[in-house]
Amino acid sequence: MDERQLEAMVREVLQSMGQNAGKNSNEDKAGDGQKLTAKDFPLQEKRRELIKSRTGKTLDELTLDAVMKGEVTFADFSIANQTLEYQAQIAESMGRNQIAQNLRRAIELTSIPDEEVLSLYNSLRPYRSTKDELLAHADHLEKDYNAVQCARLFREAAEVYEKRGMLNQD
Image (cartoon, rainbow, N blue to C red; front, side, top):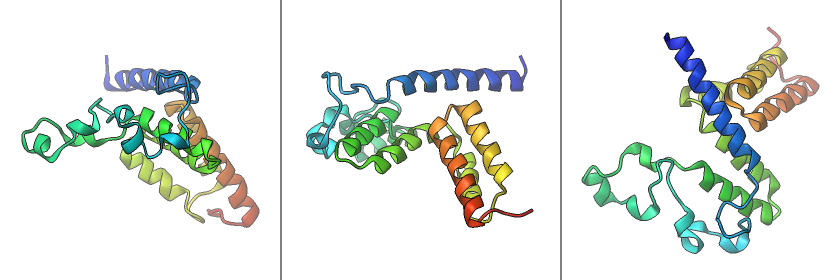
């Protein structure tokens, strides 16, 4: 199996995982039958047991002593998608829907390599991209990463930038 086939297979698996996660993103994540609300904020004080790193470490495991002993690594300090979803649920319960949307886009961004995220961010700056480039980024995000909400943002940006004359004219 060559590198391209392997990469395509990995992307397919990640996309599948993203689709399965997305189906349940607004459902109960705390395991108690309810979505989180403002009463659960801040999580580190009110629902500390729910906070996990991307590798499954708890807050209590992420200590300087553990770092010094080599028990935790840099990867252990990455936020878990589920923790971002908890924060989105709390924001939504407080009527802060834009923050909830931003957090859910952040969930999608966690599966995209950092260099690509930075490149995408730069392409969103006014006058940096043509409409076709922004729409191509949207298609790429949706197809390769199942980043539906991020793709929607790129499509909205293409329309708004076009109306305001903020597209690159190259």
